[in-house]
Amino acid sequence: MLPFRQVDVFSAEPWLGNPLAVVHDADALTDDQMAAFARWTNLSETTFLCAPTDPRADYRVRIWTTGGELPFAGHPTIGSAHAWLEAGGEPRGEVVVQECGAGLVDVRRSPRLGFAAPPPRRSGPVEPDLRARVVRGLGISHAAVEDMAWVDNGPGWVGVDLGTAQAVVDVTPDLAAFTDLKVCVLGRWDDQSAEDLGTDIEVRAFYADGSDFGEDPVTGSANAGLAQWLIGMGALPDSYVARQGSVIGRDGRVHVEAVDGEVWVSGDAVTRISGTVDL
Image (tube, rainbow, N blue to C red; front, side):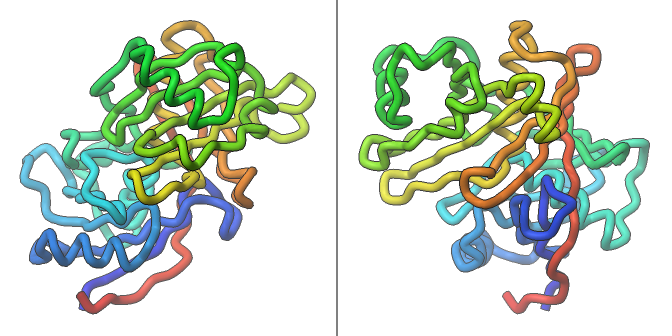
């Protein structure tokens, strides 16, 4: 039996964030065991905490979806750091240092848990044929797209700027056209709406693997990639709050801040289930 937690990430209010399954002391588990449990939880990600192999790291995390392992993902980083600290983990320094497939990721603890966005694996313009597929998959017109770029920091995201938050809320994806796309979209609320809602930006993230389609409740990696792209272009301010999940009954809040050229993505994390699991 191994210690287990299920953490609600990017929300302090119950059941409004993105749930993450976390298995502690997972060094002895095989890839097949991890994959099977990730499929069984049927969450967007399940993580397994292991001893670090890099002496600079405080712990190592392996991040699994129902379809395979990821080198990096955002809400699993915050949720895993929360679970590790709650279980008694003591970082060596001011920040928690996570080891994952993408390398070392710093996780700060104040004012809330947040990770330093890893360098993009792919950035820049989207190829014309892929751009056309993304437009079809989102069910929008080419004219509706203000900008589009690769914002891939591990999962494979393409970012789309739709200008306004309402345009983001109004997206109705064409499931048949989505195939194997991973697309995150962003738009801005006007000043009055931002004040009323307590958020500046609306984000949605869609993914497909050819046989399955989903909308992610709240996505740290997508928000990180979008921020690196658009803050760097001057199209977003250095500090803002993004909302995600409102269309599917969630209400996640992602706090984004650029400091000395580095993007930090932060959010609340609360354990909702704890116990043991027999793997």
